[in-house]
Length: 287
Length: 338
Image (cartoon, rainbow over the protein chains, first blue to last red):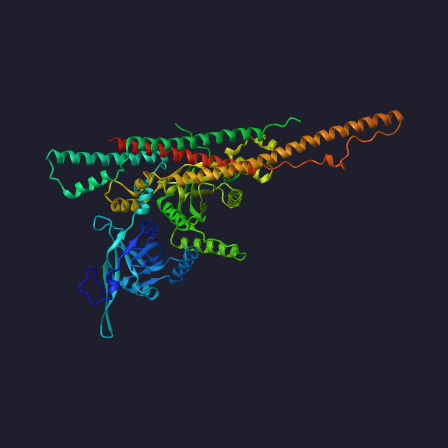
């Protein structure tokens, strides 16, 4: 069965499948890399199932994944179907809303064996998404691509399966929440505490404000050409600070600070109470 | 010239007991953190649990993978189902070369109120089978403020021994010098990632200088969180005062009983003197059948310890958030001045 990576011809596909796009959560990327690192020695690539859901606007939301053991030789591919079903059942016990939406494989292109596997998944799900994750970094940078397949047929005769790339959106919001510095390096010695995190964020904010300052200064002095769009953004930002008179602002800030000081005071009193209670409870009884 | 080391016979080595190196650090993989966060967030505010898998290496406990537990309904037959699920998952994961070794479990918590008797019970259950286990607590409500609220907990050894005897009277506790801070030990967490995934993340990272994490941290509206923390704190103080009342009641009963015993003893002695004068047998000075000699059981201190732990946790949280808020308020003020 012939396959191709780039679209050659646009046959009359149904309206929804053309606008198909996929979103991948960072957990899936982590899972795939972890499975690849742990693959058995003789396997060149890892194959697995993608779980997720289809959003109402047709986008495929890929949220979870698991690896499926497989055997691959030059002309045949054998997938452990029982394992696949068992894992699916187990995963659905935890989260029944996650269903199969496709499958993944590591490695850059779409190969002949992939078409067979794709057909297998097509029996489970109407339009499976095929995700390839290039762990070999053949293009010099991380390449994650998603494909959907269309059948090229002439009358009743099936000729080939055409894999068409669909736009992929890597939603890194969860990864951002943890902070990329924790996920990027191979070893982080300690999780940042509250105040350290605040400090880091404020420094970033300060750096941004400095940059904007320098830009505005240089535009005013005529060194750089003014860009209207950037200027509009800056004026929007400055205008979004609420216009409060200094007296009102002072009162607001002070009130808030009083509230917080009160809470701190309450919590220190509570702690003192705790230590007193402790002493009383375990004091020796005088009989 | 250094002397060759004395060869130890196999019997000698087998006879010496292995001294377990104390657990100093828990090393979690980024994958596990993402999985825990995803699972806890999907089901919040319900509390969920899951199993941790990994390796126990010297003084480091490595956690390399995890899987979630399905939410158990209050059904009798689900017990066997739960065990089956666990076995099935572990078997499947082993086929893809994931570490098959249980090293503990994780659970989500709401506002940091996780110190319960159930936690201790689960710890004791796990400790019977595994030499070293750890419990990771994740708080999704605090993470909405940009703080990564992961904690690795372990029961301290002295507390575990005491719990086995199930004796929490004041004397025992004074003997062992155990107070409420000694129940749980918190272990520092390190995060590790494989080289492949760190290459991916470095490549996929956006170029924006500000991330969602910063947006969360610089948010000004933390009042709801503080309000709920304060509410929980008040409830816990109520519980604590109830426990204190129990103790007061017990002490009052004890002193009343003792005064009753004294009066009874004096009466007995007076009677005996009279009998001796009359030449009869003196009556025994003790009477175990008399109800005033029945020892009153001392209430267990375990609950009050746990409540104290919770309260101190809430206090810490409030302190942390209040501290953050101070910096945010000053930032706001400075922005306006400009």
